[in-house]
Length: 279
Length: 262
Image (cartoon, rainbow over all chains, first blue to last red; front, side, top):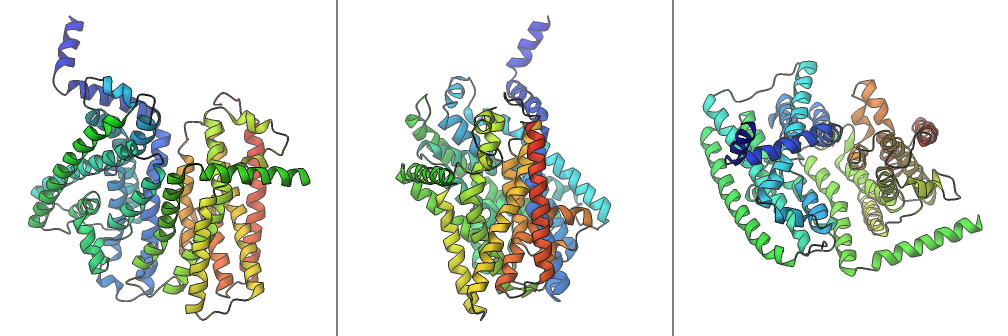
């Protein structure tokens, strides 16, 4: 009876993915020390930038006309949470473990798409690190008692959630594409380092993109990177009107479509170059 | 001594041969090194695009700090960081025995094997930019200034090594923390900003960050001719204390090392 129930459960669409997710969740929870260190990394840069801006606002009259300190604080704190929840780091796993070390063979034999398997592997890391981010955010608010503005309108909250989910989709697909590039390269570190710098500059990790010189700001809005962290953060902050939020959703949908198409293309071309003993 | 020099010479040659073995990788590494060199310069340019000065540092001085960072981190990555990264791996896979069995001091054996020549590009980039910026800031470069600058930089490299080592030895107690090295690469970013920035923090945060806050601010102040006796005293005192602490922790941790992944 129990076996039949389990068989039915397992055959339900999506249930098997949920079980894969749960298995990985156990593994990630067991490695929560590693998760915490990753979270600290996500926290460090925003904390440094915030400290920099606190001094800049204190010593330069007129700076507060851009954003107030509480706006800046909420931006960088939300940036920490968004980085922990939304910035996927699957590319190193794909490149080094799966492609270079030949573990991709295992995934090719699985009756699930590689794209979804890896997502279920990555999702628990995002959830646990995101929860660390939320904890740090609440702790900061309790200690500093700083007033931070958020969206409160239910419709805006729903749209902001959609923006965050689509951001995760862009982040994941983009990182999967980057990881798959290891099928063509012998040294992946070069790609990784260039990616890191581009993310840092065009993703709004240094400061809000509205502060950037005009040309750089426009280039940032054109690239998908700003739609991973920057737009979700300012949407939650309430810096966007509902119409602007809809526009962001449309652009994100386009990016998800384009990137997924690109992923499929790269996967089908790249897999022909793969050999079971690694690349 | 002669034997040690010969050994290091062989290591230098072996590392060079390993570097040029794959030409494609060699070029990619040069590009990524240049990208990283530009990274912090761009960040400082962006951060200071709206503010003329921060914590008493002008825009030009902050860029000078960023270029000194390239010189400093270039030296650190050339001679130290890859070795410590390797030690972390050795602890994780239970291979530290091979290092410990070698007939040299165990702590010295943590840093001599790998030389990452590519990072010297960052040193060259940083030095070129530093000389250019000194010209724009109308500061005359003198020989004593150069000597003190490099002496402080090298001492700072030792200070950063002493800061990293106790963290890496944590892996002897918990080998799962293998991402600690990536964290250390990240926390080194603290050094990119002026020391004065951290003085606003509560003491329990400021004190642990003090070594990182000093390692770049001090050589930059040498160039800006703002180096004071107090700063020098603090710098060398922190260096000695941290060096002794790192050695103590290393020796203590080795007693708990049990080979097969601890």
